[in-house]
Image 1 (cartoon, one colour):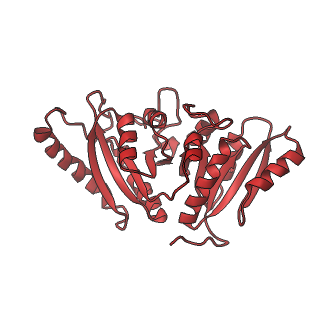
Image 2: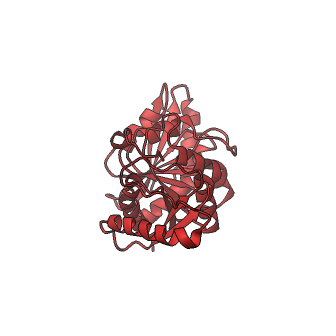
Image 3: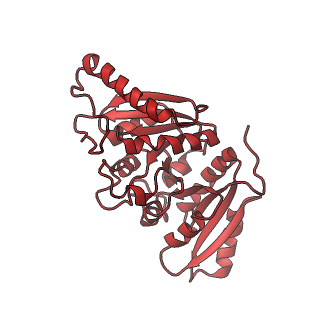
Length: 297
């Protein structure tokens, strides 16, 4: 049973620019808003030179019953307009496509999405346009949360579980250990087993340590969210994507830990390259983590 939005309902903000790629986020936003009992709010970013008549026709075809609409014209980059609305009270989730313009497979994270991710603390749902047009949107009931063993990523459990409770979703935690995985430099991090090729000796002891460490964090998390812990070996990004596909996860939850400077956000970019699955970004404000010594997500 889904919650019904009220006048005081939270808002799911979906940003559109009029391109075929960006509009693919709207059906996904509607499904998730229905889960949250939220009202869909469409933010239409229009360039100053867009003809008023053409703009109105596009808007009429986009807005659904009961949905709110804001139109912002801009002379430069659209990210500041998106960020200004995203910081308003009541925004529960921001929905963006990974890129705008044409629906083409293999395109990297666009500069607008990068700028928004780097400058807001709101939860963000990233949707790949080519995946969104290929499948019907579905509720986010089964979430995958990869962790790297560092305290910083473990702390994302609390906001992730809060969001899962609102969605009525369950969470699978996945720790991936790989032969080329550099250990996190953050104090208190859990390292990978020394001998990955000897699971009967190394993995049971290591699995116990992971679960004990997570237990300390879980003690302060909501207790009504179904949670399971999985361990896997391999390269982080591809293994996360493979696990999400084989277990039929509806979204992958990643901890946001930087402003996406060059060489940072390696896991986010790698997972985006390997999976069509929507990605939920949650975590601490970038200002709090920009100087962390851990391996960046």
